[in-house]
Length: 330
Image (cartoon, rainbow, N blue to C red; front, side, top):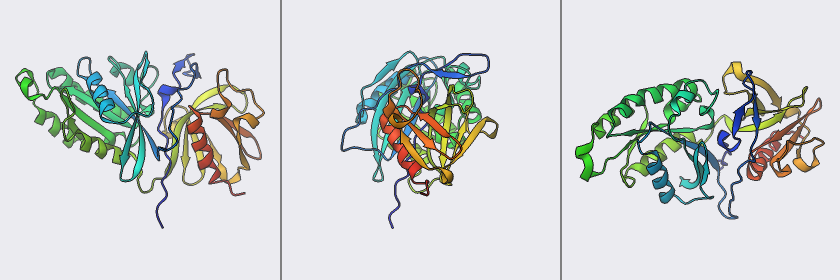
């Protein structure tokens, strides 16, 4: 029998615009979630978040623009104070993949290495594009710092889901470069990273490198995690709304975490084998956070309590409800 596509949601914290509101590192959703307008024909099997990182002046904006020109867009480019976000379509081995591409701008490494307390949260990224300019010796040196930060603070598979990108490889301007392309390629391969080069336009092998790292990220055959994504969950005691990383495993258990999938960050779990049903947002007896559409919310009804959950958009909510229903026995 043919293998059915597994639906996987990436960690898309940029759509929630989280802000630290106390010394206890609690978060509150203060912005209206971004809605992705999908047409009636093209529905993705997977959703993957791709982040562009690098020092100032290495060419992140050029890489972002070239990728937007190369791939078909599923929604308009969104400009925020934290960077630009594009939603792009990619088809790979018969599967449809929605790429959430974000240019994180300049000066993000310090906040990255502080352990998610502000700025960049590495758990919102599936694929890390680490960009180095061949015209800047220090940007090549800093690749080590970027890579070490990804390995330390990123998700468990982050090390193998890095794409090192060398910019400014235009033949007419190679005399201006301080770093050789082969140096960056060798550095990437030694660490198990994919490698690509680009100039004013994407090089011929850029698409192959991107597809390679997407294959590492996307479970085209099987994967123990059915769906993963950031949600707002109402607490069982204080009834306040907190951002939680939800991970639906193929065992039928949803584990939710504070910041990452590390054991010390787990806040609880939901055994879907005991769940009775899933309610759409409009049927839930709860006061949703201000500005939240009921179409982006749902409730998981268990004998002991009902878990009320809000996600980024209506499309994501339907995906969560569909996958949760697969594990409800009755």
